[in-house]
Length: 112
Length: 115
Image (cartoon, rainbow over all chains, first blue to last red; front, side, top):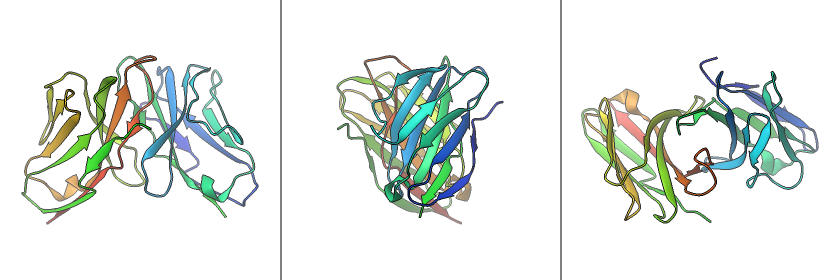
């Protein structure tokens, strides 16, 4: 598609439950990025992919967070055993030949 | 920790006013500076990607300048309209790794244009 699509728009989980977020990049884009925005703070980089390969994971928390981009499937970000501090808006972006990263509308995760 | 600072945090102007705000960043390892316009619950919209010192880019009533030696970029809006109300984000991409690297964001400037 011509836009980055993220699902679901909102996700509510009890503390300790699993959360899984999805991102469909713009068709033809090879790079996918995940960012986390806690409260109204700045967007924080989590992880990036080049096709199905992890490109840079320096922002990923060591525990509980994982991500995948498999061929012919939306990319996913999974949080095992969510904690209250995981409540945030998670943005996905994709890019190809230009430097511009095109963002999706985000998934708002609320952990109760 | 890389610090990208935006000022002011928020700004209220009247319709028709021209306005500008600042993004400051460390000038070492500079690769590119991105500007985005973002309305809550929507996708951040890419405005400009700036790479060259002295660069000036324009899109309608919005323009931006870049000074990589001193580490700042200005965003200007001429004749603000209520529909310009949004959060304006700048983000730095550093040299090193590849050109498809992560962005480090400032906290944004929230612009409100009153009719």
